[in-house]
Structure formats: structure tokens, C-alpha cells
Image (cartoon, rainbow, N blue to C red; front, side, top):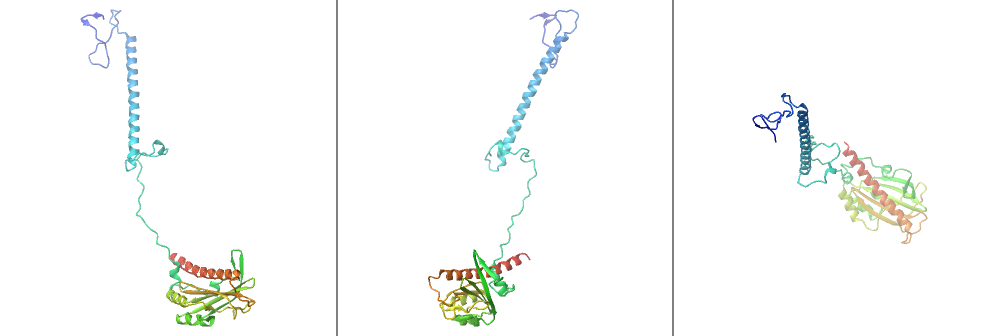
Length: 292
């Protein structure tokens, strides 16, 4: 350590108040050592730059921590999500985007029931005729094609029924009986639909029937009379305000036996078709009412 005039020389720091500037010990002219001053200033500048960079890194880490904490709390239950990969690119931080609009819960009205429209004459107002129930000239079910024969429509229900059925139809207020006949390979099927004012009347009529309650077979349009005296296969059922019946036999007058599976299949086809036609009537009216 060297001493100048008046005691030990203190190190000069331009950022420290009252510090003395270093002077060139080799000269007596009092001129500052500018090279030394520049070197000292550059050294201090580098130290400050390192501090600034380190401080920026700490700030970045702090922001990252804040984002991570926001992601954890955004779950609403304090449960962390899957991590950074759960954030999509360009997504706004939680709290910076406007909240999505909320809507009061709504429920669509329940669909109208087709059965409601075919259960009462007050609602069942669509046109009704042999053509609306049995349209076209033939009926295709799967790969089987039935040819349509004669059709009939009467308000005297008893006149289109046989055995125990006429009395039942009359007692329960049958207003119409619509029939159609279909043929397939020597098999003839007549399907008949009895119309009542309400579903209760139709159900009551169906409940009163027995194995002798049959619709009268319908001939014509190339179909000879059938089931006039021969044994035939018959069905009966009801849906809404309609009771529907089928009778199936052979066009040549032969009796139907338990071995004649094709006759049973034809009768079932026409029974199912008749049900679907009545149900579609209800569906069409329910759809029209829903769109009003």
C-alpha cells in the first residue's frame, strides 16, 4: 500500500459519495489516468448488466409461477390439471378473457303421442277411407309382394262381419268398417278396420270377441269368394279407437290347417301392416299438430 500526501489513499467509486478519484502515481502534473477510469467504468457496467439479466430471469420465473398457480386454481376445486400441455397455444390467461355467456336451462316440450290422436274422434280428424288405409295396387313386405283386390267401406258394421262379431260391433257403437283383400300365390287375406268413437269402446269390443268373431271375407277384382264354408285363419286386435281383424284362406276353398305356414305368415303380414297404417295415421296428425 502506498501513501500520498495526508495519509492512505482511498479507492474511488463514481457511484459512492465523497470517494476520491485515482490519480496516476507516476506523474506529478495532477492529470487523471483516463485509461484507468475507463477500465473501471467498463467493469462496473458489466457487473450491472449481469445483475439486470439475473433479475430478469427471476422475474420470468415469478411470472411462470403465477401462471402455474392460476392454472391450478382455475380448476375450481384446487386440483392441478395435466400441466403445461393442457394449455392451448394462444390461449388467454385465466381472468383476462371475458366470461362465456350463461343461459337459463331450458327443456324442449315432450313430443306429441300419436296414440292420443287415434284414441278419440275429436282429435282423429284426418281423412279416412279405404285408400288412406290401404293405398296403391299392391303391398310389398320384404321380398313378398301382395296384390290388392277389392276394397269396401260401410257404416253398417254388422253387415261386414260374421258369427259373433256383428252383435259385438253394434253393441259398442261401431260407426264404420273398412275392408281390403290381398292375394299371394292362391292365398287370400281380407283385413277389416272397425271404427269407434273412443279407444275405450274399441278395447271393450275387442275384449268381447272370441275365436268365432270374424270379419267377412271380401271378394271381387279377380278374387273369388273364399272362407264361406272352409276353415280359415283369423286374427283380432285393437289400437286407439280402431279394432282390426284379418281372415286368411285359400282361393280354391281348401281348409287351412296347422301345416299351412304360408297362410299363417300372410295373415300375420296383413295384421302387422294394418296396425302400422293406423299408427302412421296418428303419427302424421301428431307431427302436424306439433308444427302448428
